[in-house]
Length: 86
Image (cartoon, rainbow, N blue to C red):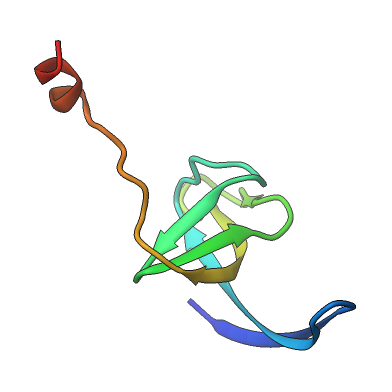
């Protein structure tokens, strides 16, 4: 994974540093509106995830994500927790 930073000017805040990363994966279960929780950080996708399908062996997804801030990931109940509540 390659990490880089860029500057973006927002009229209300001035110049601010943006931390971006590129994620390379075999599958990508989200779309352009997905959030990524990684190492205590919350990231949003920038643009559409790109599917590289040169061959079956080398096919992968490349997704650019932008850091939004730190925070805990949301609690996603699994099937066992849902059945205990019944």
